[in-house]
Length: 224
Image: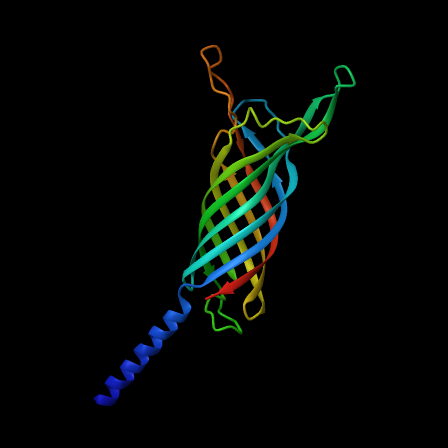
């Protein structure tokens, strides 16, 4: 009986020690990728082109379990759309241009990790696949038309919000270092136009940041 009790105590201490080592790990990341974005409108007949650009992202994730983490990002995000403007050097002619919206975007997401555990490190946070979902808030830093350099930030709201999500895989390259490849997406819920409806015009259309897709590459560093 004493041997059984001693075995249970030793096993319990070992489990507590493993849990203490595993829980509470942080990972910090730096990456970037190519963006594909567009603007949506609720006005019939309005056609708005898509835009390709780039993003740079800093991330941190706190692991509360070997399958669950809380992830936050700071993204220097380029969104917008492609379109046309009147050519100032020609009558009734247009030129193609891009309308670039630069945001500092901050998503806060819950992350689910899955796949088999394989690692040279003592860390348990080594499941290669992950799926993250949560809200984001974006702060408009710049709005500029590309061909003539026209600043159009004034008629836009300074804050955007919506849903953020990503799906990716990590590859361990050293004991505390991983590379990742991910699909990262955002979808805006807020009307980004600063204009408001008036008695003379109750049908003022709303404009939102539509689906912003990106393919990102980056590096992750673990601390625990």
